[in-house]
Image 1: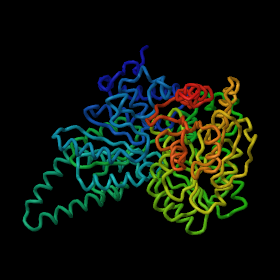
Image 2: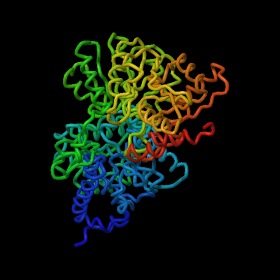
Image 3: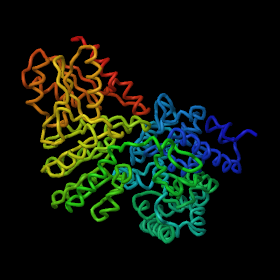
Image 4: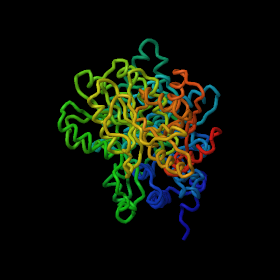
Length: 627
């Protein structure tokens, strides 16, 4: 028997189904998502929670003419499936396949390429302004989760949208807040009344009538609205949104397709900004994601029957994140001034262990990176040693606070920049490739990158004894197994590099994750009679001027290797140094990532593509005009 899912190639196909068939389709979609993500990895729990919501959206509205704006976008798998990407769905997050996030280059149904939280209301309001300026009639719908609503940008968007009084629908997907007393028969009945077309038609007519009454009409209208809002707020937790200028409807069951569709149809002709509050269960429909929603938020490939990670026995080495986590706990045991901060990434940054051991010294501020850095400034000013762990891509959101609240004040805040460099399947919005370039120009900020786990520990110890703003960047990978200490040591001194290999023909200056590939490349080159010195820079800023000047003069040929964008990055600092020293006749080759938004794909595939593995480094060096 043919499945309903096999008939769906567009929203038009969805609309041909009856209401009775939609729950059957919902189950088929859940099964398909679980099957696919168990192989590819991806955001499972969040997508399982929005199956009915997404089906209802495409059943009621007419995308892409009506525009759906997804916040963050990690919950858009059903949307992709319904909008012509059914055949490509098994390529999810794979190199050359479809993205795990909305991507405007991929489909006209994706209004924006997104990946960061709290952006949807602002961009949707911009689309609403554009619609009205053009004189068109399309509906604009923003879908935002309760976690994203805690970010300042979301409230800025709500504030402006309520003031602007534009026709805009915001769907709040609430899968965390405990509001069960309000999700009952009376709440459903009230919302059924206030979303009904007859009620809203009568409401508009009464408003028009009251406004026409001289002197007392406006007061009577205000009193009537207060009576309505007062009744709603006795039963429905929507006062905040009503006060901001939104008509609030909900909370409603986010897994009841009939109720969602009925509500969306009823509100579609109501003027002004509207917020619909849906209560969903993250991970719904799969036992293990319901039980462990955080583990299955961004899941590695897993066995469906057990929920266990595939090939788990192959994972032997520690990740950089785990090394950071363990060492921070060791240091915090002897120093009660150490506090840890993250922005809704407790497990991802490895701070879940710190939270358990030192709950009073741990702060998860939610999806609010700007606030996280401002909080650190206050903690540092108050005499503590804040360690803030944030992914490289999300640290971009706190750029102003890094400059103004921390570096301008020259405060001792330790920035631990996780996922620095290529991150893999999450793609362009999550690649941590810009931090060296955007942080390098900030006064007072010291920047480091370790070549291995032991060096990460040493850098963390150094950072916590430093007096001023300091950062450590490290990749999303396991620490290397081999030991690269020949010719060097673990002691960290401000701005000092270490020579790992001597050579007469050229000098390779590598930073962080690129040190080991550079060493391997030097060994390969040696087999062909090319002797390369290898320097572990350790510091992105300040650089080791004396050592670099010495080795630059010795070989007159310099190769810089970094896992970051070329423009403005570490290699640029070496070029600037050579120019500032007036060094002549120096040939420089910079190996880095291009200044472009890099697509999704495994870390191994992408590093190979951009010649940031040992064989690629050898290839680029041999291809240089000066060899």
